[in-house]
Amino acid sequence: MKRKIVLLFLLAFPLMLYVYFSMVKHNSLFLPIVTKEVADLPKGKTANDKPLQLKEKISIVGFLGNDVLARRENIFNINQKLNAKYRDFEDFQMVMLVPEGKEAEVAEVSEKLKSMADITNWKFLFAKPEDIKKFYVSLNVVEPLAEDGGSGNLFIIDKKKALRGRKGKNKAGVEEYKDCYNSLSPSELSNEMTDDLKIVLREYRLALRRNGPNKREI
Image (cartoon, rainbow, N blue to C red):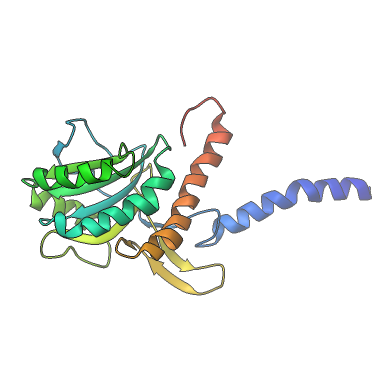
């Protein structure tokens, strides 16, 4: 009888732990949803004329604004701290929204990036400023766009087009709220954003294992 109780406990305990941690607002198993579903990307043109969408992709989204060259430091930080780590994941992409007419500036920065690393995951979308602003509003975040239509912040959007971040109590019991990550801060990209992105990637790895080993996804 005791042996059966021990075996039952060993089987049930991991499941109880999983359910418990899944209910915690921010932990190592799940990154909270900040905005349930953001809008589709605005209509526009990509640098390679290929279609671009958020659904079924894990996306890092940024807004470069009217002065792309002024945000070169942000771009290089992103490339070094994020692209270098996650560029091999098939379902991972970095989407930068840029106002129409800034193609030459993006081409200049892209050439510099190519000399540093593989930039296959970099996706530049050129759209009307008003459409970019509408999309940004759909994120429902605290900080507005800058006057030039850009932002130094990055956003994590999952495969279901939900904005992910930190909301509620962390494992230390401290209330926190985070809907974006500062691309000018290498330490924030290396620590907080990398940690949070790992959680999202791990969620999909676990889902992939449950759904079968033959799918070639994250």
